[in-house]
Structure formats: structure tokens, C-alpha cells
Length: 189
Image (cartoon, helix red, strand yellow):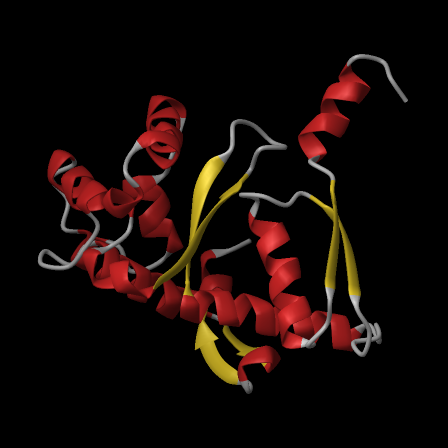
């Protein structure tokens, strides 16, 4: 995908057709995480270590890859930080009061990491999921049976949020995909 595609304007039907670009979203994220007063403790420390001025030096995804491309040892360091550092070190100070929930994600592809969801982001994700469900003509007027990972797993929280939006009862069968992976690895089918 070429650099020019990242600046493309996109409509978000699940957000009342708000028009934005990926680069605009990236610049907002960079400005928030690297604000000297209210940014993320982790990223401000990383910015200093790299002798970087992220808010000036990163304007698009090519810049992001060039300056903060997570590779090799640094990728491992970042993943460890997402697992073990206090979550408030990773989240910009300006966002601490906006956190709705902290879950886990990525356990199927490796060791699980923390996933932080603000109320606004949470509502955006639920709007998108509801949009996708309606787009495919799935019924929304009944109760919901969810078979998948629950507990600290992010997607279980989303399924519960969908049921709440529909005023549905939420039934669950906890199925952690990591156990399926383990059984397949042991030759069980």
C-alpha cells in the first residue's frame, strides 16, 4: 500500500458518516501520547531515549515506521511493557479518567497483553459492531448467546455491550481460543 493511501478520506457510517483520514487520526494519537504535560509516561520516556520530537517528526505512517517501527528487541520490550507495566504508564494522563475498562487481547497469537478502552472508543467499537450486524441482516430483537472468550478478554466485553445495546439477556459459554489451540497442538481433534 503506497504512502498516498494513508491520507485518503474515509466515511464512517457507524459514526454518522464522519469524514476523516488515517493520517489525521494518527496525528491526534501522537499529539495525545506525546504531550509533555499530559502524555503517556512510557512514550514520553521513549521519545527522550530516541532524541525525538514526535509531535513534529511524525506526520504520517511512513514517519511512524521510520521513528517508532516496532521491530526486534524493541518489539519485545514494547510487548513486555504492555503486559507488565502499570497500565497508567501506557495511557496518556489526559485519558486516565476516560478509561472504561481494561481487558486482555492477543492471547491466541502469543502472550496476552492489556487492552485499554475509553468510553468514547468503546462506544465507537460498539457502533461499528452494531453497524456490521445490521449490514449483514442479523436479527437484533432477541437475546444473545455468545460462545467465545469471556473474563478479561476484550471481545467478551464487546459481546456483552452489544447485548446491553439491544436490551437483551446475555448468555455465555466461555470458550478461550487458547485451549483450542492447545488441544490441536496435542493432536486432539
